[in-house]
Image 1 (cartoon, one colour):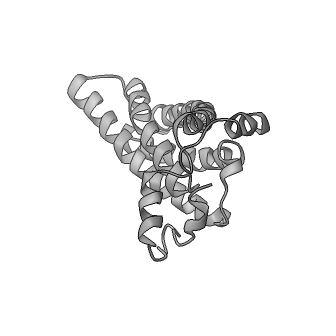
Image 2: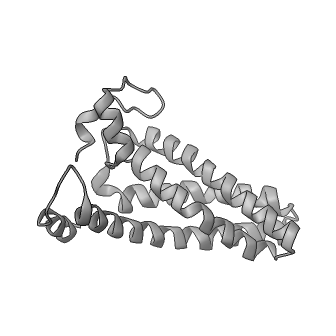
Length: 180
């Protein structure tokens, strides 16, 4: 990570985080997010298959339960590794709550894709679930980067410019960190 920070520090900057600097920062994080995601996909697929095949749970509630278990594991790994240099003063429990809330949006995306692919196209539930996970990945990374770990971006720059009041759910009161 320190090497990446040194490389980022040498890049020209037009604003708080722009151009090549942002690409380098997010490329490394997104790659780590992807590795954690692959671990999560394996866990999710294992849990889904066990619940459907062994426990005889319908694939949609089984997918929801498997995803929630995976969300918690992925949070722990992402918090410890992917976003370790981006932690804010927000408590671990509050970050977990945010991450889970955001990932539930990803869950809605993945369940919709799963349901459409299985019921409309007759695709096997495990394969359809993988497509659903893929569809939710960009949502989960982008929104967690900005809302759980407060990485700079256009939303935060606009909020800082407006001097937005504290939001009890997302804790956006400290605009001084938005340019980091």
